[in-house]
Structures are given as structure tokens and as C-alpha cells.
Amino acid sequence: MSQAEKLIIFDTTLRDGEQSPGASMTKDEKVRIAKALERMQVDIIEAGFPIASQGDFESVQAVAREVTGSTICGLARALDKDIDRAGEALKEATSARIHTFIATSPIHMQMKLRMQPDQVVEQAVASVKRALRYTDNVEFSPEDAGRSESDFLCRIIEAVIDAGATTINIPDTVGYNIPLQFGELIRSLRERIPNSHKAIFSVHCHNDLGLAVANSLSAVANGARQVECTINGLGERAGNASLEEVVMAVRTRQDVFRCDSRLDSTQIVNCSRLVSSVTGFPVQPNKAIVGANAFAHESGIHQDGVLKSRETYEIMRAEDVGWNANRMVLGKHSGRNAFRSRLQQLHISFGSEEELNEAFARFKELADKKHEIFDEDLQALVSETRDVDERHAARLVSLKVCSETGETPTARIILSVEGEEYSGKASGGGPVDAAFKAIECILQTHSNLQLYSVNSITSGTDAQGEVTVRLEKAGRIVNGQGADTDIVIASAKAYLHACNRIVLPAERAHPQTGEV
Ligand code: KIV
Ligand code: ZN
Image 1: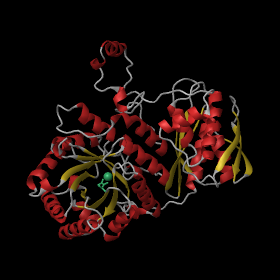
Image 2: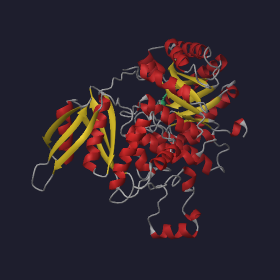
Image 3: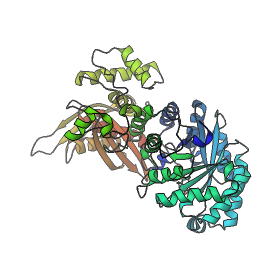
Image 4: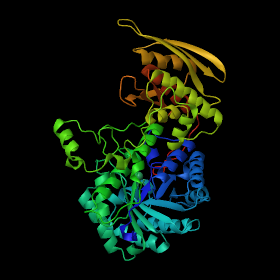
């Protein structure tokens, strides 16, 4: 593939995706997702914003150390301290990129930066030069480019390319642009900027008007050769362009686009599930490519057509994006080796033999209640206990719930914390409410419940319910997940998971607002 035909996929799930309220991820979770992105052959992984917090710094460092098949990128404002921190975090990367940005729209320059345009150009150039001390792979973004004046964009972009930036990313930071206009912006920048041929043009679109993917594709049709996107379209506010939609649109419509990515699309569904289970953001059933209904044909006419010839109603093959790839079933007679080897195939690993043994015990417990165990069940089984400090975590010992027509539901719960057992009892509006109150009466987290959702992991009445709980405390938001064939128990596990996480310290700065 020539350079002109290559579409670079830049994934920012771990950075912009993590800026979704409630989507914060631990270092281990980030490494797991980064490895899945590497397997999918994503070209560049934006692993975080190292100056934001010690945790962000260590996450970028860990991803840089452990992922060698993709370029690892760190975000930095156009400030020396940010760039130095990013350079430090990326020191051990096999291939590193620094992504530096400064706002260029009149409203951002005046109201946020309180800087004159000349100062902004000067700071942008200085930052690119500073980033070159650490790597020759430097990306520059004029933040809020979608609302910037095009003459000013031409001026600053020409200057940063002269300074050594090799990728110019055009963000539609607030999701304001419309496809025709955004495509035209990319075309005109490439034509008007004299040294534009020395850089790759990239786009980074937000979805406030539901146009992030359409805007990205319009940019690709007009010469952009890098798209910044996230798994499941996760991201700040309404999210970013969804990776799976961009990749499959370009690949499916090769008659329109003169380029393609190197992405292994068969990994898409797995990545989507992993991100959904780590963040607790469920994928809507009618979501393109990765929604449960994306390849389901309900109507008789459609089913008949697909049976005669699948192209009548299908423009892509479900297996090409990873549906049905891993549905091997385990059951109550499956032994430890079958369990271990299936987890290995799903790229799930454990820190110690003891953790594997515990997971196997939970698997056996589940297999007693549920006839067939699918890959989705296994993923849920392991995500429940990850990312909390096991030594101090509260664990569910038992839960008894009484619920009867006309009676107030009550719950009695026993938790174990650092080897000691505690019991709590509460009544509530329903059995789930009673169970949450009983937990709160022991743990006293004083957090607010922001979201409660239940999804069936697989089909059938013996399916596990997967529950997501979102808690807020002093502005900090965390998600917890729990799965069980009994949804009240699944709910209690999810609530407990979130409670265990909300006690972990996490202070970090937001890259664009600077707020902690
Ligand atoms: O949306 C945006 O402008 C960003 C930049 C940091 C690229 O996320
Ligand atoms: Zn963004």
C-alpha cells in the first residue's frame, strides 16, 4: 500500500474516551485495552494525558512498556511541563508520538487562553520544537479548528510544519461541523498551505450533532489520511467518531475511498465488548457494526432474502467484524485446563495461579446454575473483581432478600472486609433498593447513585444479568459491574464493585479545561 492509500487509525479510547464522565479506567484496564487495540493492529494508541495525574502518567508509561506493535502517543498542552512529562512517560516506548495542542478559535483564544493570535503561534511552534527533543514523531492540533478562522489555521499550521510537526490534526472539538463544510476545510487547508505535503492530515471529530463519523469520512474523501476515533464512539460529551464505523465504512466502500486501514476487523466485536465491560457503558442494540441487532434480521422478507443470498440485505459479513468468532461453549463438566485455555484464547490473563483458581471456582458456581457458559459469561466473570485492591475490598458473603406482593422488601447482607464479617439490614422500594441500602449501612460511602442498568449477557431465561452501577461522590464518578443469574445478586455485586472503587484516590486534570 502506498502512503497515499494508507489510512492511519489513531485510537483515543484511553484518552478522549476516558473523558466521558464515569468512564475512568485503571492502569491495568488501560493496558488490557491497549493490548486488544494492538492485536487489532491499530496504528497509534493515545494512551493518556501524562501531566493530568500520577495515575495517568503511570498508565501511559505501562502501555508504552508493554505494547510494541502500535505507536504509543501521549497528549500534552503546548506547555513545556506537559511536553516534558509526556516525553518522560513515553521513554520506554518502541515507537512514541507526542501530541501537542493549543486552541485557535477566536472564542477559545480570547475567553480561555486570553492570548493574542501571535502568541498562540509562537507557543505552538515552541512546543513542537520541545517535543522534538523526545521523538521525531510530533502531532499538532489547533484545538477547536472547526470554529477557527481559516487564514489563521493556514498560518499556524504552516509554522508548526516548518518547526517539524509531521501530523496535523484538525479537531472539531465541539462537534459543530457539517460533512460538506468539514471536507471542504480539509481540502482547502491541504491546497492553501505551501508545505502541507510534508505532513499527514488527520481529523478528530466529536459527535454533538451525531455527525462525527460522517465528518471524518468527508475529511478522508478530501485527503485526510489519519482518523482519530474511539471504540464504541466513547468520548467527551456525545463522544468521538466510532472506530468501528469509520473503518468499516472505508473498507466497505472502496469504490468511494482511495485508501484503507491495516486494521484486523475480526477483532472489532471483542474490543467493543472489552471497552463496554471495563467502562460499564453498554452498547445500544441498534448500534452499527457492534450492536446486538447489527446483523439480526427480524422481518420475514429480510430473512427469506438473506437465506437465498446474503447480499440482498447484508453489506458486510458478520464474521468479518468478529461476530460469532469465539462462541465456544463451556459447561459444568469443563475442567480447569479447558477453562484456562479458553481464557488464554480470549487474551485474559491472571497475575497469579491463586487468581486463576478463584476465577475457576466462580466459573464452577456459575456452571451449576447455567447450562452453557459463553465467552461473554467468561468476560463478565473476570471483570467483576479486577481493578480493586483485593486486600481491602469488601466482598459479598451472602444476601437474603424478601419480596412479596403488598409487603415492603427487605434485604439482609453479610460482607467480609479484611477477614472480618459485617452484617447489614435495610428495607427499600424494591429488592434492589433494599440490597443497596443494606450495603450502604455497612460501608457508609455516602455516595449518590447516578445510574443503574441491567442487560442480559446472553439469551435465554437462565442468562446472566449484567448490572452497571454508577456512583458519584464529591464530583468523582465511578462505575461498577456485577453479573449473576440472579439479578438482585448481580445488582449487589455491581454496587459493591463501585463502592470498592470509589474509595480509591483519583485526582486528575482535564486536558482542555485544566480543571482537577
Ligand atoms: O477535541 C479536541 O479538540 C481534543 C484535542 C485535545 C485534540 O480532544
Ligand atoms: Zn476530543
